[in-house]
Each structure stands twice: as structure tokens, then as C-alpha cells.
Image 1 (cartoon, rainbow, N blue to C red):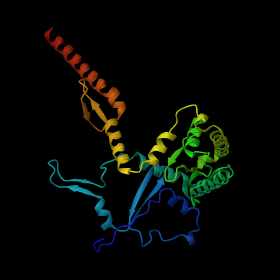
Image 2 (image 1 turned 120 degrees about the horizontal axis):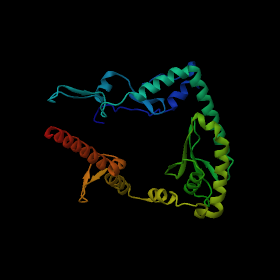
Image 3 (image 1 turned 135 degrees about the vertical axis):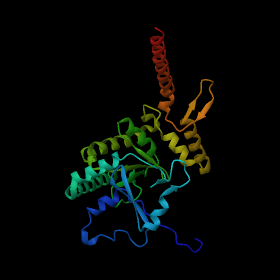
Image 4 (image 1 turned 180 degrees about the vertical axis):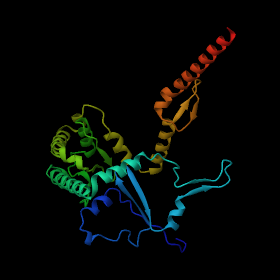
Length: 284
């Protein structure tokens, strides 16, 4: 690296929270090992913090611009100002749960993970991509007659939201405490879906599903084509169109594209109507 030491970081996500309440305090590793420069961690899922080893490293995150006509501009991150609702909600949740609440949730989640691991191994033809130490796992097919992506489609028809992965094709599970209430039903539906796919293949589905799409994506040898496709997908999704059909590129949502322009036009019409009424009043 040109004689300079590279910064190294680890995405701790939820694991950093759970580990703190599963490992005895005397056995915990250093808060920030000497080999790491930074790491992100979830306080509550949906709200994360990014921790640096020192202020010199953190300084590279900040943005400043002193020549702006409006004055000196500074931002603590690339995203600029953000609403504080998530931060307030995370703090309130942490204060409500307390240490005992986190310990209980961590234990429940690990127990559910163990039940899922055991149940998945009990379904013929299925296995795990790797042995998970924490609460995330991936289901893979060991049976050539069972396409795991078709199993994912069959599960979604039963009301489950399945995360697909590639290399190898698998179904990813992020286990949460509330999954304790549906674990048994999930395993039962999984076993039924595997049996149906093994017996009928794609005919086991009543809808098109996503297996063809994910299978095609995984088989593409030139990954740059896939990257270009994603860029074009976003370009076609986030746009505004004029009445003459010409596209105006803009980072707005499709829902605004459908209704936003008309809404803006209605507001303009209301303002014009109010001006006409005021003008008529003056003339009288």
C-alpha cells in the first residue's frame, strides 16, 4: 500500500450487540482490537453507530466547505443532515430494555437459531452453507432434484419473505427474537415446500416466482454486465417524464412520478383561483 498502513474494519451489525450479552464479561475481547481501525455496530436494528479508533481517522468522515455564499458549511457525514427520529427511538428502546432485556432477547434469539439449525438439518436434502456462530444462517440444497431458489418461491407463496443469496444459491435467514413464535410453522412449511419442489419442480408453484431471475443472475460470467444492468434499472426507475414523453432524470420515487406532477399542477390551479377571486373583489 505504498508504505502506508491500510485501515481495516469489520461490520459487526447485530452480532456486536448479542455477543456482549452472551459472553461472560471476563471473556470478552478488547473493545476495539489493535488490528481494527473502525467498526460499525447496530444499537437497535435500523440504527447503527460507526466507531473509530481515534479522532484522526474520524476526521476523514467530515465534510467542510468554506467558500459557500451562505457561510461556512460543515457536515458530519456524506449524507448530510438526517432526521433524529431513529436515534431517539433507539435510545428510548435501549433505556426501556436495559441490560436484563438485552440478555433475555439475546438468549431467545440464540435458542431460536439452534431450533432452526436442527430443524433444517432434519429436512431431507437441505443443509447449511456454513455453521453459524451467531444468529444468521443460509440454507442450501444438497439434493440435485431440489432447487433451493424454487423452494424460496414456494415459501413466499405460503407467506414467508425469503432472502436469496448466490455463490452458492441459498436462502438467507436473519433470526430475530419474534421468530420464536413462528419457528415451528416455518420448519413445517419448509419441509412441505421441499417435498413439493422435489416431486413437481417449478410446477409446484402457482405463480411465476423469482427462481429464473436469480438463477440467471448467478450464472452470468461477466459481472460487469450485471452491474450495468443495475445502473440502468435505477436510471429507468428514478425519473420524471414531460408531457411530450421526454424523460427528465431526477432522483424521485415512482409514486411521485405517478401523482406528484398532477398534485403540483393542482396546487398551482388553486393559487390562480384564489388570485382571480381577489381580483374580482377589488373590481367590485
